Each structure stands twice: as structure tokens, then as C-alpha cells.
Length: 246
Image (tube, rainbow, N blue to C red; front, side, top):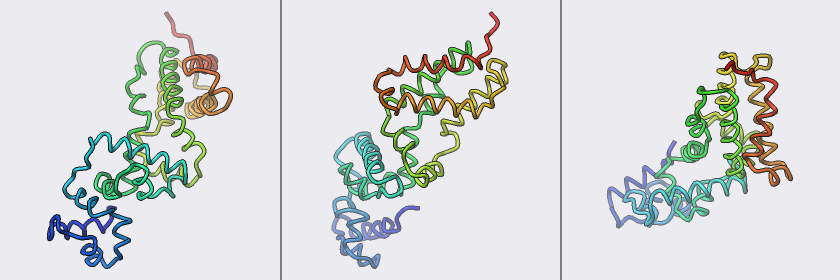
């Protein structure tokens, strides 16, 4: 839910326009001026909130905010990272974040949507051609993604159980990478191209473990490039791949 102070500030802006003051908003809301500064920013931030002009391209501002989320979360954890701390790291006012995303949950949903690898998975040629080539494409994409986004992977892997549960609650069901991988194995098992002896969710979990090992465990992560690693992981699945008939 959006900060109710935002609605009160809008009422004051509608009444006074650019002549509004932080004191006007504090008096209307029954809070201190410092609370207004903490939650909405300065008068300039508040005016930008209702008359947007951040002085930078919108895409650039979002890039800074997204990078700031990661830094703040790595520093203090996802749940403990505040909008004020994120705004400071991004070089914007808290009001800018409230205006764009509504609240912290909305901000994190946008972060997940931007960084979840499912969009890339959807673009892969899965379901077409030899199963070995499909699996190689999936492994290669995921390993490259995880190498390129190690800080995000570390945040998810090393974060507290509470932080992981919080992120899962915010993530849309169709953004789950593990579900996408399991669905791939299930489809191949139905097609008879991968053995059904091992359940698809367990195959997905085994693949995830290998991906984490190649991405995060030193010296493995530093010594093996993603494509070489993908070929090595693929060979580990030879036992479950059923050779296609020419």
C-alpha cells in the first residue's frame, strides 16, 4: 500500500501549488517535519513528485535505483533495506521511489521483474530440435546469466531464510526459474527424450546445484568460463538423455 503521507502531500500541493512548504504537509498530517523529510524528501523532491522532472532520463533513474537496491540489500539484507537508504544510494529523493513504485513491495517487484532470468528462458528454442541441444542452450544461458549477475545470485543464495521467503512472496508464479526448469524436464519426459526414472523437480534441483557450484564456489568459478562449464554440466546429464532416433 502506498504511503498515506503521499496522499496528504498531494492535497497540500493541489491547494498551494509550488508555494507549499514541508511545514504545511507536516501540520496537515499531524507529524513532524523530520518525518516528512524522511518519507518524502525535501520540498524539491515533493514538487517533483507531483510535477515530475528528475533532470535525468527515466531509464537512467531506474537503472540507478535498481543498482541501489542490490547494494542496500547486500549491505543490510532485503527486508532491512529501507526506501530512504535505497534513495540515498541512488542519488534520488524517497519521493521519486514512492512516485514510481508506490511502496517497497512495488519497488522489489520491479527489481525481480527486471532481473529474473525467465524472460531469457522463454526466448530459448526449447521444445524444438534434439533434446541435447535444447538442454545445452538452457544450461549455457543460465550459467552465463549467473556469472554475469553473481551479486544477485549471492544475495538469493546467502540471504536469510526470511529474506528468501519475502522475495518468494513478491515474485509472480511465472517468474520462478526453478519451475521453468522443472517444466522443461517434465516436457522432455513426456516426449520420451529424458528418462522418467528421476522426477523432473529433482533433475531441476540437481541442475541448480551444479550451476551454483560453477558460479559461486572458488576456485571453480574463476577458473572455468561459462561455456566450458555448460559443456561439463551437460555431460553429467548423459545418463538420463534418451538418444533420439535419426
